[in-house]
Amino acid sequence: MSYEQLKVENLARCNCVVFLLGAGASKDYGFPLWNDLRIFFEENLEKIIKKQSDIFPEITLTDEELENLSKWIGLIHNTDWAISTIDNIIYRNGAIKDPILKLLSYKISLCEREDVQSGNDDKWISILAEKIADYLISRRLGNKTDDANIAADFFSKIKIITLNYDRCFEYHFSLSLRHYLERGLDLNNSDWAKYYRNICWDVIHPHGAIANHVEPDKNCFQMKSNYGTYKNPNSNMFRSYGQINEVSIEIAEVDDLKDGHDKNAYRLTNSYISGADMIISLGVSPAGVNNSHISFPDGANYYFSNHEKDRDKIEERIKSKDQTYLNKRCGDFIQLL
Image 1 (cartoon, rainbow, N blue to C red):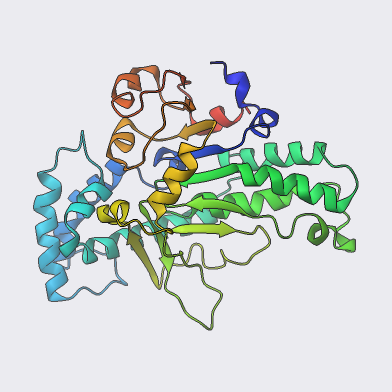
Image 2: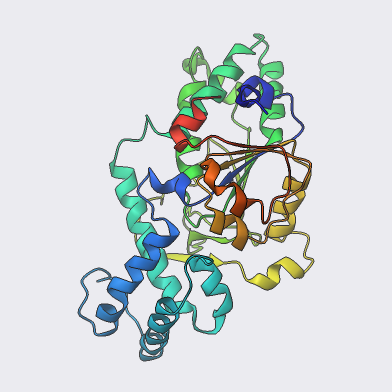
């Protein structure tokens, strides 16, 4: 299977293309890998419990939460991390999950703040947005309605499944796509609104996501009940990206996979993936594949950013013979499009 099939114009010919994002897809933006989170907690939990840490000065923990964090020290030290991930451990210990989620949300919100302060125009999400924008610009016919329909049709085929808690993809893709699509538009004539204002795309967080607490009087980011987002690049939904107060994380429970609810994130994820012509996996480790509750179809074409040496472990879950391993960082991978 040739990577030439990855070209944006070929993606447009598919019925459904899934971008599956793992922790490695956010690493270039300053977010931790699963193993980084494990090390972070190993190094800091005891200090936090003894109130000797200056890492979380804005977090107040109750005596019960401090007691539960003590239990997390044992859980993290006694876990076989070759076959597990942080969220997998949280799934199995839901009764004591609240304090660890409080620390995890604070850690990720700090990463968001640092991400905002750094330059990201040359990183993979912006590169992807530019390539898609260039393709859509090349298809412009000059009729605003037709051009908007071409863009809407393209995005109806693209599904983003992120196994991460962060909002990194939504934030950067939304801003970059608008920036690049504005090329050649007469903004004094409100061309953006006429062409692209109502274009949306799906981003699903089946494992859960960081979110701001819902405040009715503020335009805050929030997650739907299925941990999915439906984004409009003209929205102000990301105004609070990088703020470190009033944040929380929702972690999808294992039983979500079994509850049969129509809006369940795994049901939606599996629906998209089962119908995908192509699945593009970026920064997903073999452990991430094997610990996920996603049902991977045999018939799809898979492109992995992983090294070929990961094939045996990944094929424990994914039996498709149409698998290409490109051994590339996310930015270099996206340059192939």
